[in-house]
Length: 95
Image 1 (cartoon, one colour):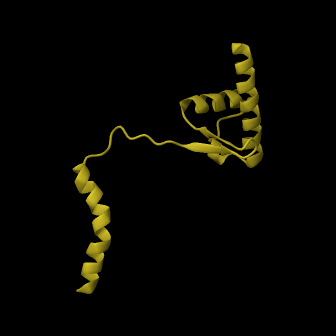
Image 2 (tube, helix red, strand yellow):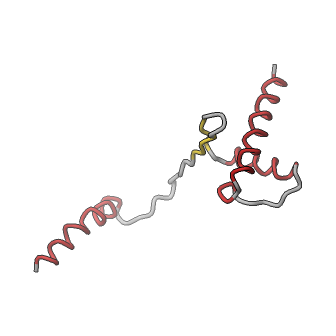
Image 3 (cartoon, one colour):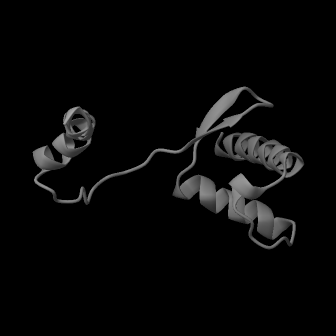
């Protein structure tokens, strides 16, 4: 009997949020993915703009697409080096 009560107590926090939402999925949910650049000690939001820049980086080097999270550390470092140089170049061109 006590196992049933313990199971209900554990399941309550999991079930409660679904009942508050009415069981409907959250359609407009967004997930923010932040990537830390350990070489410049800054964070970047990985969104469609960053994905486009990453694909441009791969295209410049004639490499096939490999998801960033699956790249080796050396490749990640090379990407961030290229990305920061590109940002600085674009910023200079705007002046």
